Image 1 (cartoon, rainbow, N blue to C red):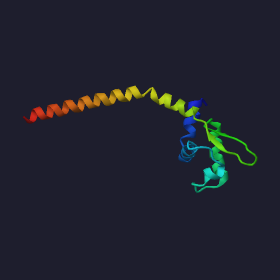
Image 2 (cartoon, rainbow, N blue to C red):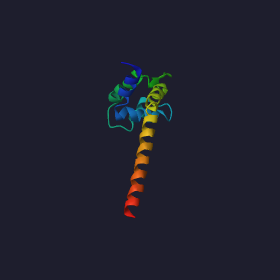
Image 3 (tube, rainbow, N blue to C red):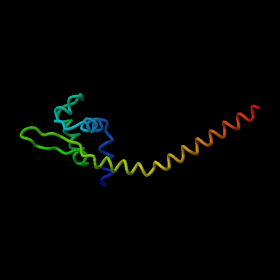
Image 4 (tube, rainbow, N blue to C red):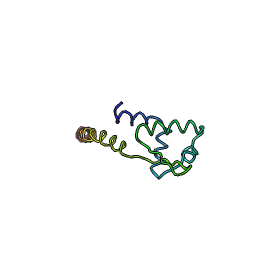
Length: 112
């Protein structure tokens, strides 16, 4: 699986997206990451393994403390990929805006 597909697949799950959002604020332990969820530590660990395989997190080791931290590079890849379509959407919205303005002008001229 290519990196972009792996990243998007890992982010498809809302729990993993919430973990990424928490790690954007700074490093956290597995217990800290598990706290807001109604699931077991092994279930949270499975989510962390998916994120780690996708390259979205890294786990350190400091004695018995194993902090997780965000690796944002794959997120930039997604932003770059989506950015390619920005011009398309902006152009579509500009055309829609022009069309709506034309309809509005025509509607006013028909009412006169």
